[in-house]
Length: 222
Image (tube, rainbow, N blue to C red; front, top):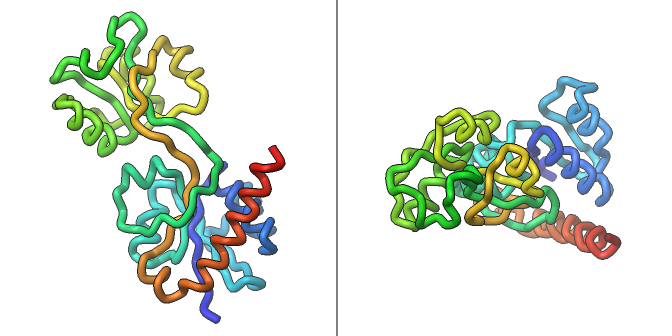
């Protein structure tokens, strides 16, 4: 039986992914050690189910999957929307839920997207998502890519608005920002390489069914 490779993101997404695979009978001890920093391994074998996990940065997971270095991957929908990689999205795993929002300073007096200047500056970790969203509203903004605390953009005069993901909105409020539009919703998704999905359809389908069965049970228990 061929070993299937699963790309998982480091951090909370990966830790939850390990818990899910553990719940369906995989031995994830070594994977958890790698995710927790007790091991420096970036490639971890799971012999019982003929799986192999690779640990990657979140933005790289769709790339590994598209090019066939991984058969499956678990990554946030936000990353899929930004990367636009050609992968098969198989399932919404239901965790790491957050919203894409467009936000402006409270004192700006702006309450809708249409009130933004057509040539405003918008900072974001998601420049592709930002450009697509603003283009739908006829706004040709100067999109400024940032990789750290996007909320700093308006605070220091770098940008008039930001587009970012938020779970509760608390960080926005604490930095004097107000959401004026919801761009989309994100959560952890299971994706597959399109060729692998065709070749290993039954096997991958069985994994999806097992994972989703556990997801549904977990949701019912909450």
